[in-house]
Structure formats: structure tokens, C-alpha cells
Image (cartoon, rainbow, N blue to C red):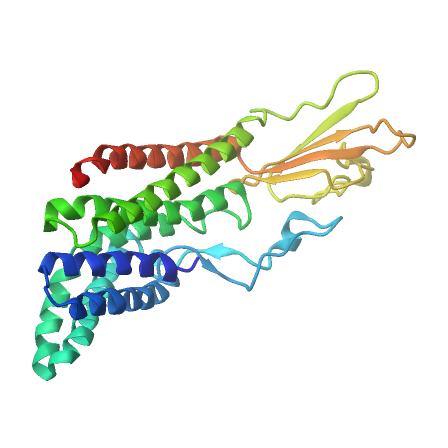
Length: 335
């Protein structure tokens, strides 16, 4: 997942708030900070994308066609970044170093207006003012670090990607809401209020999406799925461990007579990939149409339900805490 836009957005707000901290009478340095900082931050995000968090191994996700197996659509997958594979401590130190270097580059770029001496002074100021960006960007990097743990296109993978945008929006909202306490009255309070409102609204919208995803997962049974009951619908359940296989496909070492109970099933049915775990549960029913002799796949679920529920509940907890903090800080800066 690219970090260019999240980092660029944080850089834009951070550059504007940095200009507020100087209380500059001249507008030129303010707009220069607001223009240069997001560009440098976006370049930092591009640099960090393949080093922290999930990265793409292909061009685009492929939708499985009819009759395809679970693995046939895996032309695009997520995986841990290069720094992430070195361990959390090394990844944190390298990320801190990269943020500091970006701050120095940002300060030197702005200092070009004053010549060589301005570049030296700008480098020092850039290093100092990169420190407030460390916790802000760290929140986004922590969320990005979870991208890639689940299969691409799954429910958990979607939640992990939304977490990056939720962290970005919350960082921006909190930065604006606390800016008055840190730097005094902002130059454009109404603009700040609008930016904070947009950030909190984005967090709220993503919170709702996560809640819907959790509700969908909770509708799945804890154990093997139960087929429909009644005279017209007779169902059977196939539960497999390990590699996903199509109904009717024998596993290793299985004879033809020991094939899955879903042998002869037709149709794709509803496919749900939870993202974590390799368990596969298949619900096969007898259709009510004229061809009752051919069983039909009603639903296929891949992954561990409890692990997916834990991830989604954690996402809701983070979103709820963020909204509570935002609501507590909302009125104070505008008094």
C-alpha cells in the first residue's frame, strides 16, 4: 500500500502548523512551508512504502473466474516490507532516521531563499521540527505495518488498509485540534475547524465500514456451517483444513472413493475470504429447480472466524478511542 498520499497530507497540515508556530507576518514563508513540506513528506512516503508495511508483488488484484480455485486469483499479494523483516527495533530506528533526514532536506530546501547560510540554518531547523512529525508518522507506519498479514482482497486485508487511512485522518484532526494550545491562535481558525471536521468524519465513516464488516463475520457460525433444513433443501457441509480445494477434488493420498462429500457440486456460490487461517468450509445444498440431482455450492468461507473477529474488534476499539479523543478536544480550540 502506497504511503505517498497519507504522508503528503500529514506534511501539508504539518507545514501549515509549523508556519503558525513562527507567527510570521510575511505570508511568503508560510506558503513556502505549506508547499514544500507535503512534497518532501510524499517523497518520504514513497521511500517508506516498500520498506515498512505491506507492499504489492504484482500489478492488480485478479478476480477469480467461474470454476477457479482460491489461489488462481493471487497475481497480486501483500507482503512485509524490507525494514519490517528486520524486526520492530531495527525498523523503528531506520524509520526515525528517514524522518530526520527528510526534515533536514525540507529545511535546506526552504533555506535556499537565503542562500548557503540559509541552507545551513534551515537544515538545523528542519532537524528540530522533524521531531513533532515522528509520533504522527509513526501512527501511520504502525498501521501500515499490519498491511500484508492477510490475503489480498480478504475482509481482514480491507480492514488493515482502512486502518492506515483512519490513522492518517486522526493524526491530522488531532494536530489541528491541539495546534491552538501549542502555537496560539491559528491564522485561519475556520479552515482549521473544517480540516479537523473532515478528519473526524473520515474516521467515523471508516468506523462504520469496520462495524459492517464485523457484523458480516459474526453472522458466520462458529463451527461448521449448517445447511438449510426442510424437505426441499437438503444440504451437507464440507470442512477442510490446510490448502483450499474445490468440492469434489481429492486431496493428497485420497482415493476416488474418499473424495469430498461435496463431490458433484456445481456453481460458485458466495465466496468469503476472512484473510487469516487456511480453514475452508463449504456449504452444499440441493437446489429446488428441476435438476435436483446436482448439488449446488451455496457458500465457501476461507479463514479463521475468531481471528478475523479479533482483528475487526481491535479496529473498532481504535476508531472508538480516536473519536472519543476528538470529541473531547473539539470545543476547546474554538473557544
